[in-house]
Length: 147
Image 1 (tube, rainbow, N blue to C red):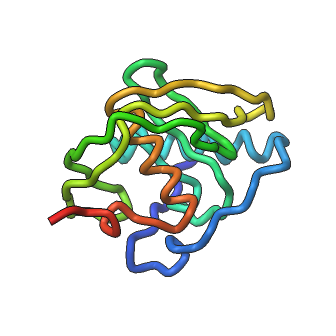
Image 2: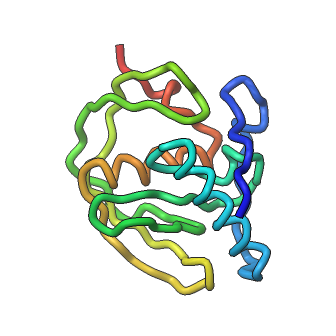
């Protein structure tokens, strides 16, 4: 496995829309493994592919309830229990702020083999899922910070 370079907020690539993943080949598995290594090394909670310059709708998240979860082509099916909490981001080092996010989300997504899943995430896990999905849409948490 290799560590990838995390791009920062001033890189215009971070604002791009990510593409749907349709190739679940061993190359995808290698990218996900490298993303996981990068996330562990950075001591983060989640990492979207766009944050390492890869324009595909996928992320690796370390959840409290399920451990490491790879979400590919995620769709939020339900989002409830909005709360405001402090957030940070590996692409925005040194910045934190309060963001309103759901604390209960149900996602439909695929795993590294293309298998579809529907899973409910709670609390900080739900916040992390929403944060990473925002990245896939070119949105940073600083765009949503409340005063």
